[in-house]
Structures are given as structure tokens and as C-alpha cells.
Length: 117
Image (tube, rainbow, N blue to C red; front, side):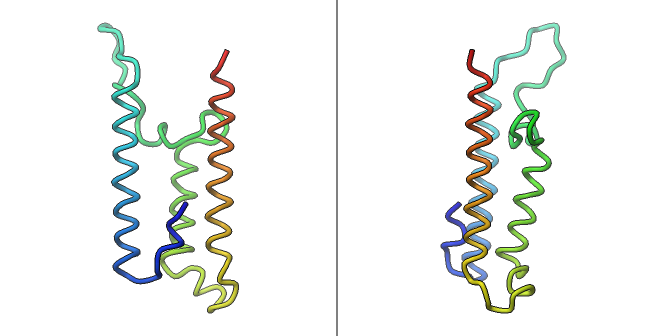
């Protein structure tokens, strides 16, 4: 959620996307390692796959969250905002990022709440 606060320069944009992708890979690996191990006779995978790990359960599938990240990134970091507004409404990329993050955090809280007995 702090990505739009970095300067809008090519080096910083590439660095923040590289760090974002590395963070996502590390997160999925941690989720996989903490998942319960399958029984010996089952042919289940060891932990969640990437789309499942990004999702909010039945409320929002992982592919939709990934598509949202991609759309927001294209809009914010790769010229979408500048193309649409030509230098006006400078606050909008940060506002959209904050709203997207808030919705994901609330969705995860709801997912955790529903998992508890």
C-alpha cells in the first residue's frame, strides 16, 4: 500500500514491482510450508497454489485479486493515470491504492472471522 509514495521514476517503479513480486513469492512459500501436510494416500498438493493464496475464500477468488493488482498497477505505475487525466487529480492513484488495500484487509478479517468457531 506504500507503492504510490515512491517517486515516479523508472528505476523506482521497477524496484518496487520487483520487491512486490518477491514479497508475494515469499508469502506463498510461507503459506505452503505452514499448511497441513496431506495424508500419505491423498494426492493433494502441499499447500495453497498462488491464486488460492491471494484470494479471500469464497467471497473473492485469487485470480480476481491478482487481476485487481494488475489493473491498479497499470493505472498507477505504467501510465494509465497520466493518459486519462494528463496531470490532473494527482491524489487519485493514492486514493485508489488505499481503497483497494482497505477492501482486501476487511475481506481478510471477514475470512478469519468466519474460520473461527
